[in-house]
Length: 206
Image (cartoon, rainbow, N blue to C red; front, side, top):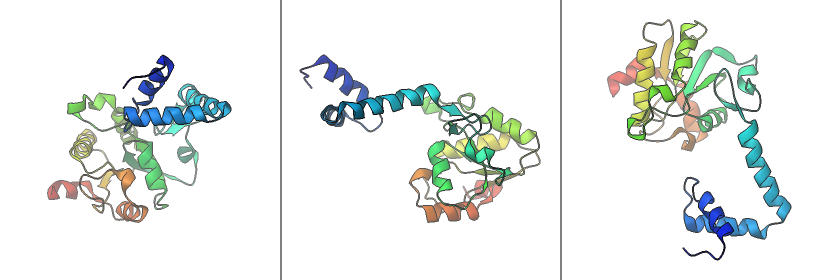
């Protein structure tokens, strides 16, 4: 792709680094931004810069937040003894949209995937294990996607907390095998949370 401007080429290159954005789509987006009023582009630029410099991660659950303790963890009406383990904020948002869950979350920040160079040390598993060992958690709900990486992560955590006085469950398989949580419809996801099963049962059936 030939560019008449180095500035345009650089902008297209950076835009194309986003997931799912090829160079043609990136060019279309950049040209769209050029056609918009300058203040609109500046607002977008400011929002992205502000996001990078000001965003925080909840000190309790590692969810993305504006403050040290996210709104969910700071809500006294939520049950902190039930912790739902998810991959990232998209899964928190998906489960919250069901209005069927009133516990806390623990955001891992990914899944164990040796092929991608992601090991347990790259996730927030250690703080989750410490949370369980502290005795404040009565039930741990695994709500990772039903993929090989998700199942591997579930099993790893399960082995790390084995022997602790905590009930371990997993969302029911209303979510199709191989599906990502964020793409599940709210009714199916809500039922999967409500009809969760003991994690040991999922090991026997797999």
